[in-house]
Length: 121
Image 1 (cartoon, rainbow, N blue to C red):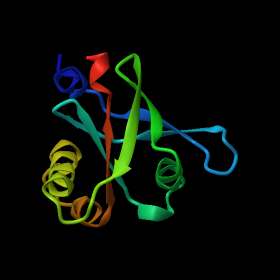
Image 2 (cartoon, rainbow, N blue to C red):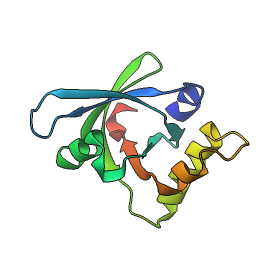
Image 3 (tube, rainbow, N blue to C red):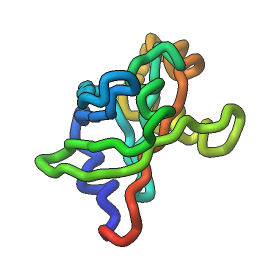
Image 4 (tube, helix red, strand yellow):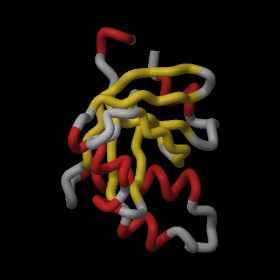
């Protein structure tokens, strides 16, 4: 089943990465968009964000969403790709509203995707 439909109405998720230096869990609350069984996130702090640096060192993450916990693999999307553009469009469509106040965030943030192993479908 495509969880994207079930997850779409959730306002945020909790993402836990493994600390790159400490090895301890690092949990954040973050906006997301779901599409085709993947979760898309935008890091406003780009590569300076602790959670981004953590997932670059260890891509295994835990996502708490809609009362469920899932383990997945996260990666930064390559700039200029169709998936990069999709992530930005999905998040702006979900959170941007009509006043354009998040346009710069949508344009300048670093897009990240979380994918889940197909054997857990």
